[in-house]
Image 1 (cartoon, rainbow, N blue to C red):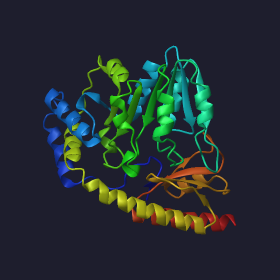
Image 2: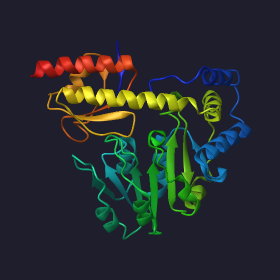
Image 3: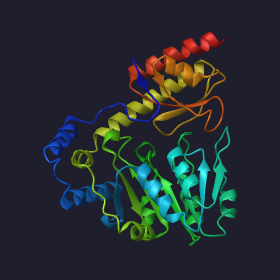
Image 4: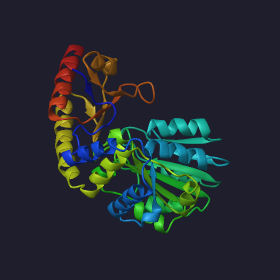
Length: 326
């Protein structure tokens, strides 16, 4: 048995009608997606996000949209990012940025130091902040902080809202009045559609102009599944509530083992343990988690919330490992 708790995937499959919509796409695999279907998905996402359709940009995965943003907007400007963050975006910034400024989130509170950010806004820059943060699960921004950054016209701000559905906190509406703001989202998480590889950008004018030459075509199966899911998004709320209940239970049981588990607003938990090689020991037992020791701080792992059965398997193995370590 292998339990995947390392990718922050939603453990529940989408409803039957979404799967059937994806299957419908198989019958037209010899054709590119039609402009009408692509436009329909943009319209549905715009309604879902409460923004005008013209501000929505489709993309094959929010991770790739973030990479493309870095590639476009890091030219002749520095990039400012909180750290830790979504690692693929950070690695893209390391690759493309002429200068990368890292704003560290320090335990135990992982607060975003706005004073440090403001000090860096004295020249053209691209600021990327994930909210809530991955891997800490903490909300980093509020409207006041966002406005402080945006008032600098030489600054482009990108907010990664991959876990928006869990917090319902968004800055998407602000793109209508701020050309230098973009919000990135995905249907991989709460919609349970990681396999579709569909993300989207809600962008201000500057971002709309930058992406206007790009004509994005999505796979037929992914497109049909996404349309059906966004048309009928009610199913995600039950799954979110179940995930939050399981998150609370898992956090409590890990705390009873003496582990330090940080508060989370997402579908994952950040755990600090003094158990040596905890990631490797879990992998040997068929449980995949994200070991942050090499990328960030020793002893930290990020664990996604799975089904009850998956969580029970993880908890029982953690008890054995911790008790053995004692």
